[in-house]
Image 1 (cartoon, rainbow, N blue to C red):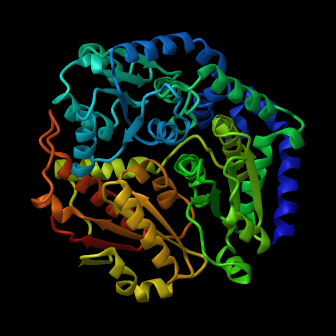
Image 2 (tube, rainbow, N blue to C red):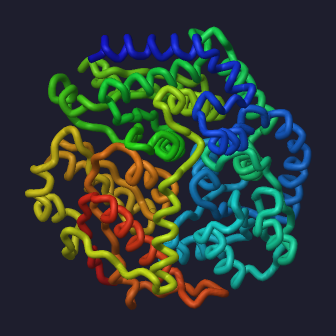
Length: 529
């Protein structure tokens, strides 16, 4: 299989060379991706990430002033309110890239009332600056959270906006007295926006040296523009990913060092949402596997492994075991954590080239809107919840492997089980869900991934609905607690609160998956108070 993958990768590189794909991509030649003139126009309107560096350099002084002003006004923390591309890179910043003099950065991309209450309590412990970030300006999760926050923090000067020109958020920010509004180039999609104002505004507040970040990105962007594909890191990675897909290795296992581990969620969205459509796609997966040798090779028969670490934290036991088991792998060592900025560009270029080679448009997300529409229908009463194939309650996640013994045994290595957890994404729940992933993985030959809602709706949700014709789905929620143990939080201007919204989002996704013939199990976690 490794030889087949290498052969296919070389064929893909030759195709990119023959079609002059690098030059044509930088010429915004959307015919690379589609013969449809309407699709071509949409693609051209999403290629601004190839050309944004100079425009962003023009924003550095403005962002430096912002950082000085916030320090002078004694803000001591930053909360980024966003979804998908508007929040995942700021989360990486907060975990791995904060400068010595920067503010702590936290994100909120949940609609669970308990998660909203947690960030409100965190904000009340100091003096927060809120960054409301949405490309469209109307993302329901983002605007609902803003409305709840604004009930508590009455001064519009505590808020910044990042959005596209002429969006509803631009209008809202002006009307409600935001401190500042940053208008991003509109020809850049959300998951390709880490190097734009959606990433740079939080970076400035976190104390990142922006000139350094932009220089790093510019260097790799220039390399990804190289017609010599042996020297082009984006083309090399993109051809590797496409070749893996073509030989049946549709799982992208990420082996991430501890000081870059938060980068996995960003890759997950970029790759899954960009490639998971028209029945194809790569599904990124985080979390190690315990096996070695032949057992690990069997477990990873449909996977490739990409490792990313730094010289400061080189321990990559999982990657080493995968290489020893002859699992196709690539490893990248960064000189320092700040080089995650270079990885942003390399992965964006790789995803574009991979999409081209797979014959898809990597810049759209045609199935994401289905869950949004279902949520709206449930909220306005035009739709009713759809029953899962099986539903039951448990008092502990530890009992789930036994409860699901028959279903787990029936899954094969050619499938995957997605655990979709509609729980607050706090550290305690993350640890419990990782233990559950390990326990479920030990009982089934299928790959097991764990994702949190509603975050995954704007990420892997596209793959689950439009990607590979496989997948079983285990929904876990604690919604019984919303009937009393957890206080609801109102959404000003709406006839419903966050408890109703989060339920509608989960029910909506169940309905969409069931409509597409996907097997769904629902588990109610009854934790009590």
